Picture 1 (spheres, rainbow, N blue to C red):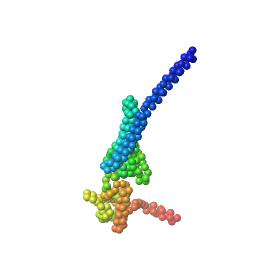
Picture 2: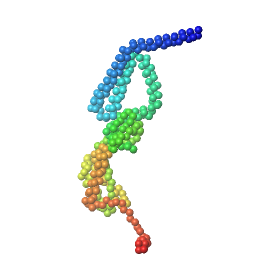
Picture 3: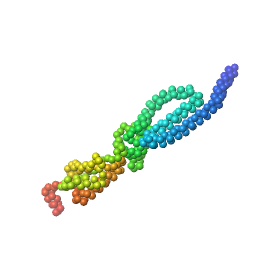
Picture 4: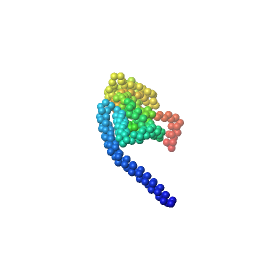
Amino acid sequence: MKNYIGLIQEQGMWSKLSDKLYGWWDAIILRLPNLALAIVVMVVFFFIAKGLSAVLRKIFRKYLKNQSIRRIIVKIIYAITLVIGFFIALGVMDLDKALTSLLAGAGVVALAIGLALQGTLSNTFSGIMLSFLPKIKIGDYIETSEHSGFVHEISLRNLVLRRPDNQYVIMPNSKFIEEPFVNFSLANRSRIAVTCGVAYGSNLRQVEQLVKDAIASEFEQKVGERIEFYFTEFGDSSINFMVRFWTEFVKKSQMYDAQHKAILLINDVFAENNINIPFPIRTLDVSKEVLDRLGGRTGE
């Protein structure tokens, strides 16, 4: 009797399960047209997002010079378009309740993700800030306390620098934005300093005039600019000076090239006028007793 009752209960369970499965199958069959339409909607919005991104890139190239800002805006619009398509697809499938639950749970999920990914979100917001900063853009030559190079990419997570040796430095946006940096590309012209020294006894006024004339012959100084010459110190073996002048450069290699030319000019003009650039000299004062003692040893 117990076995018979158990068999009836088991048959009832299987009957309920089969009814449930058949109900789901019928629902799937009935919603197949909606599912197909939802897939079509997602595909259509995917191509809309692609086409809209391409159109915006062309428009932004004409009216928006900052390449990093263009990339960020295009990515945001692309993501928003896909999200809109996703919500429309849910509506087509009559999943309004699921959509409501999804939106209700989005806040909780966003909070949890925000707590778990504080560093990532910090880099993301820093990347957006960097993209909209007018003082830095892709192609600029910048120098931080540790690295220098050309800005290759500004993403939502990292800033990528291409160093002069063609190696790439990838640093988190949050770290970069908190540290000071020098952007050589902001100004077309900058001032360069070259230091040197001349021997004691040199005609200092002649030295000053010769250096100024030599620099002026190679580096044109525009309105408001001038060549500055200063004797800086009485050194151990020379009287040292510094000459400062303006030239065009937007990257370090151009600065090095200008310094190279200036050093050659100064060396040549000193050689032509018999002005000595001394090397460090050490004078030894030896007493007569020591000399006599050394002489005696030599005689032995």
